[in-house]
Length: 325
Image 1 (cartoon, helix red, strand yellow):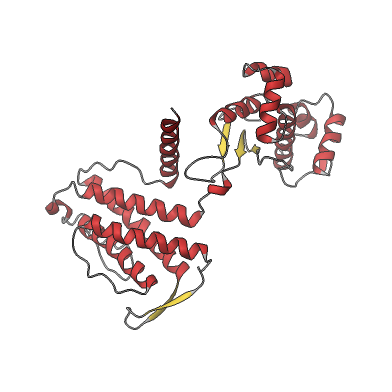
Image 2 (cartoon, helix red, strand yellow):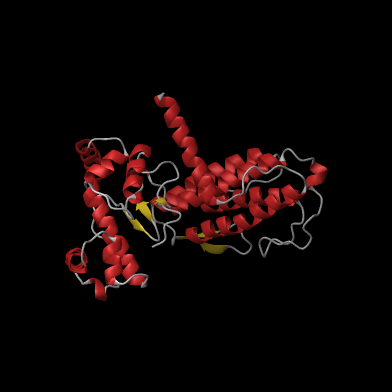
């Protein structure tokens, strides 16, 4: 069983906060750290400097399981994973799970999973009142704050808009003549829009694309374009984000509309348009990021949604801590 890299694996549930407090997460990590060592209720309590009764009450109230029950279930889930991938025999899995004999392990495993360990190739997760489960190879999966969760559409739209906003702010620090320099000859982000060799043209198309498609989905005239990028972007971003949320809430991804602004008019689905804007937008914005760096500008982040989400969570946490202090 791998021992390195052990730790809580937060499920991707919410870009604002997780459904487990930092203190509770520390306590759960103590349970996780005990999986490879002999442990019982008193030893777990000593590890966190609590009485056993206090630790039992705390975890039971928060997770619906006592520390010992939680640990026992996680060990069985880990054993199921070891058996399913063939990294351990039934006897080895029994030892790793802390059972004194293969027979005792087999009985416990069969009660939990409904089949003996020697024939197991099913799911890893046992029923649990809290959504906390073993996460291969040596971590945990924790549930998120479902009531406040943002879905994939909201995540992708917010990340794209934040990233473009950041890059436009960086571009504003660069001389216009430098932005207009052709540093990517032959680069085409969208097949029907042609070459965009300069940072200036990439900025313009990032903004104008958002303006055009937001107007098309809303059935409004296309803005004339031109003018300062950031102000235009903020107007289009607000409209686009509202439209995306409405499409999501109404489950209208497959609904179609006729864009009379096209020559000739064409029919598009809302889901197709969202995918087009976000898909090609990601190509264009990251090309812009690399060009800005090449031009000597300081781009503060890498553009990775995982890093962005972590930063969002940290900002929310800091703000919450500030209001509580």
